[in-house]
Amino acid sequence: MARQKKEGKVTMAKRADRFTVRIALGNAAMLTGSQIARALRKVADEIEDVRNPRPDHSRSIRDVNGNMVGEYEIEDEV
Image (cartoon, rainbow, N blue to C red; front, side, top):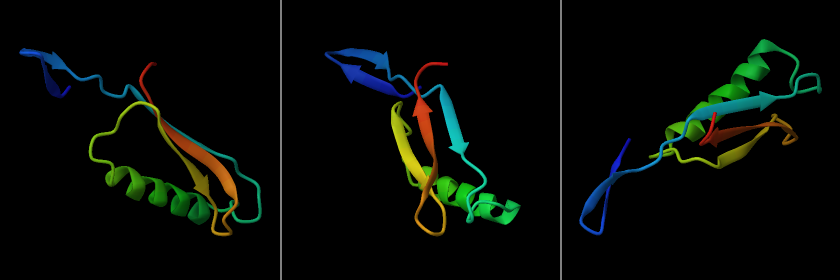
C-alpha cells in the first residue's frame, strides 16, 4: 500500500483487491485464440499505462470491428 500524509499523520492508501476481465465469445471477430489474445494484449497495454491502479477503474473491450465484446475492471472488494 502507498503511504499518504494527512494532517501530520501517515495513512495507508487503499489499493485495488481484484482485477476482472470478461469477454463474450462467439461473434464473428471473437472466435479464435488469436482474436482473444489480441483483445487481452490490448487490455494489458492499457493497464500497463495506468500508473497506480485504483478501484472502480473499468474500460470496455472491443473487437477488431469496434464492437464491444467485454470489459475489464479493477475493484476494491473481493
